[in-house]
Image (tube, rainbow, N blue to C red):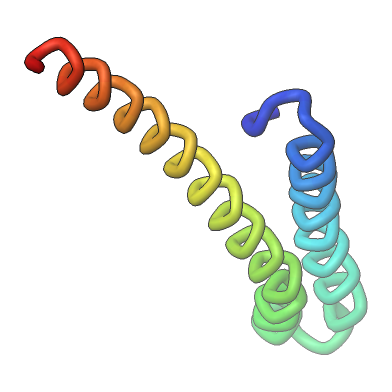
Length: 88
């Protein structure tokens, strides 16, 4: 769990797991559905089947990265304020 034990972190990490499950399910079902036609067509269908899940993963990873960036900026601001107070 990358966001910690807060409720928002739990929800985002849970949804990230769900998104990866959609990637796997989309790839498998698409591949198995079109495997009777040809291997290359089934491979292409599996690639297309992963796209919705991958978009969800990218969106949620973006949320996690921005949250981590915000926390790091808060730490830096606190340290810079301490340095400024020491120099006065």
